[in-house]
Image (cartoon, rainbow, N blue to C red; front, side, top):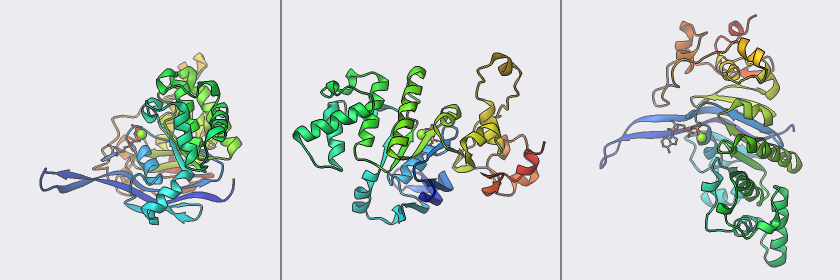
Length: 329
Ligand SMILES: Nc1ncnc2c1ncn2[C@@H]1O[C@H](COP(=O)(O)OP(=O)(O)OP(=O)(O)O)[C@@H](O)[C@H]1O
Ligand SMILES: [Mg+2]
């Protein structure tokens, strides 16, 4: 868990906003991902959290090369993915896979589990007959499904089982990097922890490197080694999961952590909660200076004028102009 496996440097993904039907005129840019630098170590699970619309899925799709990066570099094991040709990207793609939020939408309803998994296995190991049957069966067992169900269709399974099939399909090409985009958000709460346990166990056994995306910090803290907090296309804090949860340093992270309910009713009644005012601003016209300043209880004049950079503070990376004052006891 030491060398940098995936390195993002100032990655930007902007979408043009256009006007007019025949002569399309670009009138602005949606800065969905706006200068993200991040390293993932081999075998670690990095949790990426942030409110809806902050650019989490766009970042995942940009890493997967499903969207072109507007700027920056994405280096996977020493190769800059942004410089690869289409054919090279296709060849490289078996090394990185995605798990999506809705397993029902991401699985082909007309394909049996066997067909779905065989297709995915074939991208890495060309085989058929008994060997394929054995591989599909083994994969189903790995994710906690009975091989006896391999001839069934997705609609014949429950939501949790469908997500297990989606996880099996993701693992079939033996990827090195998995981007899980809200993989438990569509599931019943009672099933969520089963799937989280499964993902965590598989990551450890197979030494997978994972970016686990969620809008829910209480889910991320459960599974991640490190947590990266995103706000309006930028990272505001990165650190060890336990440290971020126990002592959040950025005002936005403080608000997210304070929103997590505490199971003890006495503590729950007495704890201080930071309520964020207003909605996240539009990524088309982000506020000047620190983009969080209009909602920040600690903001001063300087926050509306100067753009903060991610800087090291107490073993963490924090992007706040007033980190020291905000965290003074
Ligand atoms: N193809 C696109 N064209 C234009 N704008 C887009 C496109 N895809 C995403 N966006 C915009 O980029 C921003 C980030 O969207 P994204 O889906 O990455 O957010 P998210 O953090 O994944 O949100 P959620 O938690 O709701 O999934 C949003 O403002 C969205 O409207
Ligand atoms: Mg999303």
